[in-house]
Amino acid sequence: MQGSTKKSSSQSEKKWPAINREPYFENDSVRLYQGDCLELLSEMEVTHKSRFDAVITDPPYCSGAVTKSGRDAAPATKYCQDGKTLGRPSFTGDSRDPRSFVFWSTMWFAYARRLCRPSAYGLVFIDWRQLPVVTDVYQASGWTWKGICVWNKGRGARAPHKGYFRHQSEFIVWGTNGKVPKLLDRGPFDGVHSIPIRQSDKHHITGKPTPLLRELVQVAPVDGLILDPFAGSGTTGVSATLEGRRAILIEQSEECCQVAAKRLEAAAVGEQLPYSRAA
Image (cartoon, rainbow, N blue to C red):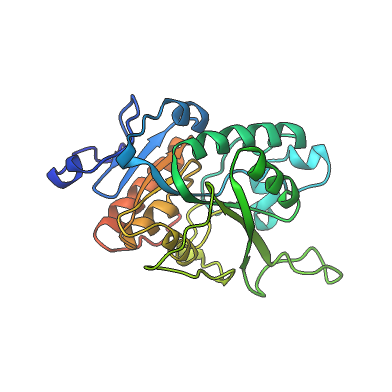
């Protein structure tokens, strides 16, 4: 079901990047667009007062295996325990080979950088297999790579068998559009985030915890504008809303947009919608 597109008087006074299509959902804090991120980023018009303060996103990893047949497997097979989605929406675009993944990633991340303020932050989630190439992509697209943060999922993370180390960590490649700003109102930010996955908070098969994103959106100032080109179930927008920031979200899947819109409506009144398979 399409989300609300009514504009309040306070919303109309805020500066938002213009896209020549109606948002799937919008309120005072968030605009969610359904579509391909390359198309929407290339269409976006940004004024001096509405440039992004941060890009925070969790793109398809195109990972999950070391062979082509493994990469071509459905995301549920690669990323879900026993291949079970438990009713959560899946996604497309996760089977690119290494060369096309680098080319595609460089394009969308370069588009995103051109829409950002000087010294804006860029935070991109990735796993250990694709970590080396994403650090290359970061620099090829014009960002200044500054480091890697660790998301520690806890000892509940799975391992194929007892001979393995647990798949306990994912990574956030971070940097800035030019120099790192010297902040007075926030920071320094944690380089390791130990936050477990809660099934009641997981609305997408690769969804990240809301408490984690609530920490990450702190890189943007209060009322600052955040871009997420791969919104999934809308956790970046939910977190931005709850933390007094604003966000533009892009998501290709209508099913994910439906989930995100419901969560964003709840966040607008300070609530976090729990995951329900029947929802």
